[in-house]
Length: 192
Image (cartoon, rainbow, N blue to C red; front, side):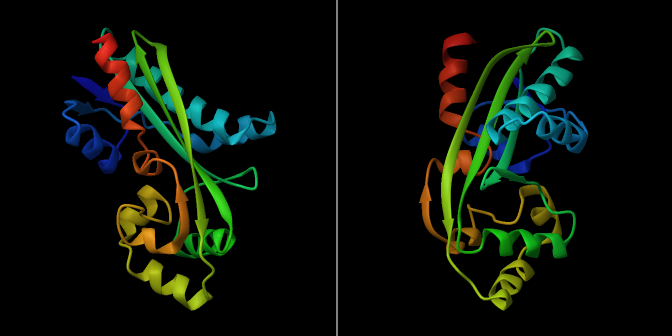
C-alpha cells in the first residue's frame, strides 16, 4: 500500500489499473508561491516539476511515518515558460490560443518519500504539437469539458477528446496524464 499525495482522480486510476493499492492523502500545498520563487531563481520547468512532486511527497510522508508516499506534479513547458492550470474558462481559452499551432512539452515528475525524506524521484517529458485552429473551434472544444476536469487536469484531456487537438504526440501517454507508471512500478518492484 502506498499513499498518493494527490487529489488527482486520473493518477489514482493509473495506480489502480496497475494493481498498486493506494490511499489518497492530498498534500494541499499552495503551489503558486513555490513556482514563483523557483522561477525567480531561474529554475527550469523540469526542476520546478521535480521540486513540487518532492515537496508534496515529503509533506505527507512527515505526517505518515514508515509509509511510502508518492508525490506527483506536471507542468506544461511552452518555449521555456511554464503554463499553469487555468483558474477560469477565459484563462483556459488563452492557454489554448498560446499553444495553438505550436510544439510544447508536458513534464511529469514523481517522487517517493518515506519518514519525511525523499528516497526516489523520476522526471519524464513528452513532446506535443498542437494543430492550428480557429478561435471558435477552441471555444467549441472547451465547451465540451466539464469544469471539474478543466480545472483539475489542465486544458486538454489526452485520454479523451483532447487527443484530437494534436498533430503529433511523442512520449508516454501515462506521462502526459501525469504519472509515468512504468518507472514507479520498476522502483516499487525492487524496493517493497
